[in-house]
Amino acid sequence: MDARAASKPAPTETLSPEARKLALLLAAEPAAELRCELPTPPGINEWWEPVSIRRKGRTVASMRLSTAAARYKSHAEDVLLRQGLDVVALEDEFRDLWLAIHIVSFVATPMARDADGPLKPLQDLLCSILAVNDARVRYSAAGLQLDPEHPRVMIRIEGYQVWDASGLGGPFFLLRPQDTPAGRRCEALAVTSRRLPVPRPHLARLLAEE
Image (cartoon, rainbow, N blue to C red; front, top):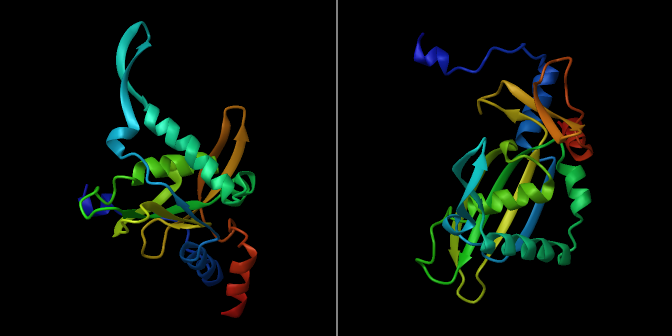
C-alpha cells in the first residue's frame, strides 16, 4: 500500500455547505475557556515513582504518583477553590469538548527548568479536575518567562465542540459523553450533515453574524 494513501484520513461524507461552515467554526472557536494560576509543580521526573505490584501471581514493575505529586495536587485543588472555581460547573461545561492546553511557567532563574517539564503533570491534574480522559487533549504547548519575584504557572484551557482531524478542513469529529457504571465514557463521532453539534450560544451568535 502507498504510504501516502495509508496516512490519509478515512473518507467521510461530503458535508453540505452549511454543515461545513458550522464544523469549521466549531473547530476554530473555543466553546469554553478556563484561565488560572497555580504554584510551580514538580517536574515530570518527580511526578511518578517506580513501584512493584502483584499481577496474575507475578511481580511486575509499575509507576505511581509520588508523594510530592500527591501533595501538589491536593494543594493545587485548594488554590483553585480559593480562586472561586466551581469544579462541578467546570465538569458540566467541558463534558463534551476536545481540549487544548497552554501553559506558561514563570521561573526564578534562566536555567531553572525546561519549558515542557510541567506540561504532563499539569495536564494530568487539570484533566482530573475536569473529570475527563486526557485522550481528549488535541493540542498542548508550554513556554517559559522569567520572574524571579513570583515563580508560578499560568494556564489556559480551551474546549472545542469539533476537532478538525487533519487540520486542513476535515474530517471533523465531535464527542458524545455517556455515563456508565464504570464512569463517564466519551465516543468520537464523525460530523455529518445529519449529525451536527448544537453550537453553544456565543458561537451561534457568531454564525448568525456571518
